[in-house]
Image (cartoon, rainbow, N blue to C red; front, side, top):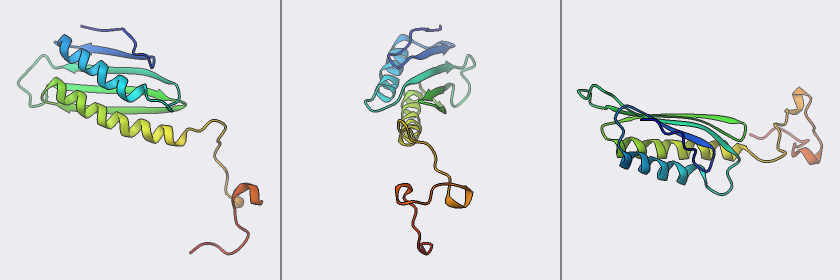
Length: 134
């Protein structure tokens, strides 16, 4: 079963294997909760939920997210014994990684080179002219 319905953050949710509708709806709810938060830059990409056909393994459920948050790529993987557990694990990891990506994303903010690499040294750059901090 494959779902090509995008979440409102332009993220495709796809499934492989025998993924039931309840797990799929639960995954949409949890992924939307992470990726549709106020303050996040544009989010695009894909999340894939997979249930292995050979059910003899300890962790037949896996999930992989490959999304772009602003200009940064975020890749998250999870494996668990049940569909809800893998979605919960994916949600926690995805939240941490998108928070990191959003923290570094600020409109108009560019990395500043240090003075020894030709960066600005004036008061507007935030660099000090005194001794180096200890």
